[in-house]
Every structure is written in C-alpha cells, then in structure tokens.
Length: 428
Image 1 (cartoon, rainbow, N blue to C red):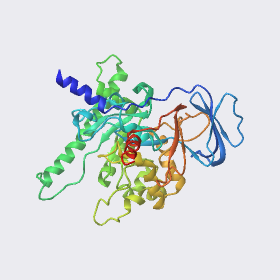
Image 2 (image 1 turned 90 degrees about the vertical axis):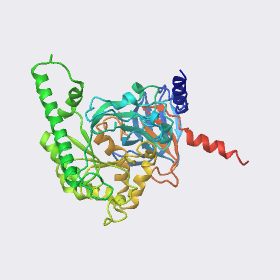
Image 3 (image 1 turned 120 degrees about the vertical axis):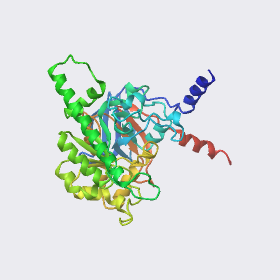
Image 4 (image 1 turned 180 degrees about the vertical axis):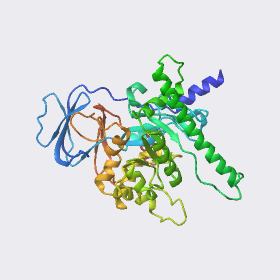
C-alpha cells in the first residue's frame, strides 16, 4: 500500500498543471506581421486569418470578419509551428529516475509497440519545449533492432487522442553497430564482434522475410491466425509509412541503403553523422536524413572541429533532403527545446537561412508525411503557428509570445519561467 501511494505521489511530482487550450470559437486574425510562409515568399505587413483551426486567408489586403479576435503583431514575426522529427519527449521525465522512463519494450522485435500509448500528456518537459515554438514532435520508441511504431504528437491536449496528429508514422529500426573495436577495455575479440555483426544483420533480414511470408499468407487467406508483430510491419512493407533507421556511422548507412533496396522499403536515416561521406548514395536513392544535434564534437581525431556544424550545408549542396532534430540519443527529450537555435548555428556555418527554417518546419513535415496539414502557412492547412518577437532562429532576441495548435491558444508558461519568477523575488 505504501508503495502504491509513493508511485501516485511520484506521478504528481512529474505532472504539469498547465491547462490545455480550448477549441477555437471565433475567427482570429494576426495583423501587421512579417509572415514566413516557408512554402512561398515572406509577406511583410501581412495578415493571417484562421477559423475552426484552419488557415482561411493570408496576405496584405485581407477582409477580416467583424466577429474576429484581432492580434496586432506589428514588428513581430509569424512562423508555422516548429517540428522536432526525432524525440522521446513524453516518454522520459527524468533520465536518472527509472520509474519515469517508458521508452522501450523487452526484446528485439517490437514493431507493435506504439509510442503514443506511453506518451505522458502531463510531462513538465513538454511546456518548456513548447515555449521555444516547437508545437509538433515525432516520438520514437527505443530499444534493439525493431523498436516499435513511432507517433507524431501535437504538444497540447488533455489526452493522447487530442494530441495525436498521426498515431502510426513509421517503424523504427535501430541498426546494429558495424564497427569492430580493439581496445584494452573491450572484452570481446575482433572476430567475435564480426560474428555478432553478421548475426544481427541476419536477424534483421530474417524478420523482414518472415514479415513478407506473413503478408503473402494473409493475402491468400484473411482468416489465418494473426500475429501483431508482423501485422504492425504491414504498412511499412506496403510503403504506406517509412522505416526510420537509426544509423550514424557510414558503414551503418551503407548497409541500411543496401537493406532498403534488397527488401524494397522506403527508409529515412536518423542520426546521419557520417552522411557527408555518402551524399551521392543518399541523393541517388532519394533517401532523406534526420540529422541529430549539430552542436557536436568531431567523431574522429582527423575530422574538422566544425564538421557537425557544416553538415547541413554539405547535405544542402549535395541535394540530399534533410531536417534537423535538435537532440541526440541521450538527450532527445529536454534538449530539443534548442532546435531553432541549432538551425541558427547551421546558418552561421554556411546553410541558407530559408533552408534552415525549412529544415525545422516544412522539410520535417515532408519527411514525416504530414506536410498536407502542417509545416508551412498556407490556406487549408492547420492553424498551427507561432508569433515571435524577433527572429525565431536567433537565441539573442527570439521570444515566442503566442502559439496556436489547430487554432487553440496554447499557454506558454512552463516550469522554467515559474522558477525564474520565483527566484526574482528572493533578493528583493
């Protein structure tokens, strides 16, 4: 009984008390703003009008209904809500507290594990991420090999049903390491490591072959005994959703591309630290990359100190489609709040500014398959937008003043701001 009370108390400690936004009740017009449509030209001194959660008009001369709420954004910037394409947000609260982590299932074959089922709507981290303009996150379960099915979540709502933009976005595969390590602390011999690499790759191929057999058997006889693991892989085998493959080393990326060709599946590389070595391969096969944190040290002693900073520009020049995720495998929940500033860093190292903004909005939406609804400011798309005082990519003057998710006004308060207000009073 004491343990149950402790766990209930623990849950309350990790719960946000911010009330989700209410559905839009009347038209809202944002006027006199600099509008970054992303998909088109920047509109200066323009208006965005939206109603019932959908953008209905954009431009300089817009007729505003009399019943509208008008927000004067003179001197401010309007952007589509920013998108994080790789995160465990909502699955982890405190990394050092095992009870607050729900990122993985046991075993190497869990495509049936959907990320949204473990998503914590009351996480204290979600509002801190949202405060920097990030309104949508692609949540991927973790683990060995086939980790699970990813979900795309809007960062506001009472329930996961409210917040789900796309419950089944794709299958996530963690590609095994392809590197043999030889150091004094490595207990496994080089030959044994090579055997393990081959065993893991063979395991992945066997899983795909078994899933194909299941697909054919199901087509021949819809009444066969169902297997939820192979059932979960069917949309990926039918190319309805992509296979997200975590691969950073060039050997992993090469193997992943060969795997995709062999099994005729659509893939997205997640991580991609060594993608600069394989730009021709990625471009030729039209394989997009979700880059992890670009504020990283070189992976090898002979690499340039700023290689990670320049990587987005390298991919842009090579016509490799990419987007930025803002985090790494170890900190891809709380640290993703710095996503817009990482895009700003890439600009400082040669990336075109429009491409940088696109990499955290429309390009991310296209890679995730949600560009018909979000990622740019266009008529007919969701009114998932932000108003910023200053350039959203510039850490020195970015300040998000308003945010809307499908037209709902989002509360931009968070734990960081509450603590700041609290300790401002301490030495008065």
